[in-house]
Length: 305
Ligand SMILES: C[S@@+](CC[C@H](N)C(=O)[O-])C[C@H]1O[C@@H](n2cnc3c(N)ncnc32)[C@H](O)[C@@H]1O
Image (tube, rainbow, N blue to C red; front, top):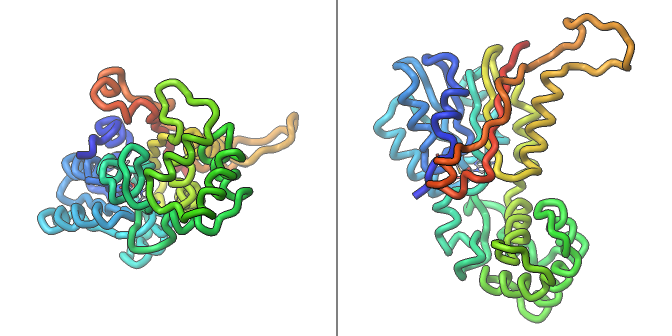
């Protein structure tokens, strides 16, 4: 089961118009979509999007009983094309609840977990792209070290990358168990309360799924997809994602930058969004009932021009 994080907070922040068209860019098991549909009136619509074929099954079931809901299997980075195909020129809100879902982590066959042995896959979309095992089979030490450092903030990135390549040259690394073992053995300093392969698994997952590239593409296209008054709500679980979202929203809200001292009318700044409230974190109660929500951070911005 996936326990939806910041459910009420996200839907409250997103909906400005009960008859509007909304996008749930990370459908998962549909927690946010269902709550969104409850909030909308008979004229409202929700487009769910997810890369995962298992999410697609759940979404297609929902679409059979809920005529206000439809689904697109693909990346939210492909949203502009999908909206064009549907003949929708602007939407009232876009919600992203980033990262992996609990069912993805819990199913050892998906290869996301260092706690259970399974095939080293890690793809959210199992119908396309390279698996983690395939990527590791050709990536060199430099590339793996960069990924571990950038996406996992792993201090021992080079040492661990070298160990992965060395182990892979003896025998291809095709299981999560073996990867976890190679990484753990190469990691000289185990952090408290953290499996020694946590950072490496997170980094490789982000690489395999192009998670930051997809987010960058979505942010670049968001203004064009939203109507004026429409909102972008993003829940991140990783500091790199949150930094991207925060910078993007801040830049859109600040408008153009002029040199210090140059007198400029506010209208010349061309501000495109306003920030709605401050960053929101899960309450203590929510964290007590769902540890995954501990690192969640939600940001909201509204298109103003
Ligand atoms: C944290 S879960 C979302 C859970 C959902 N809000 C719910 O209540 O069930 C993230 C989901 O987003 C999907 N996902 C992540 N990145 C994606 C992307 N770029 N495009 C489409 N789906 C993506 C994952 O496959 C996963 O199902």
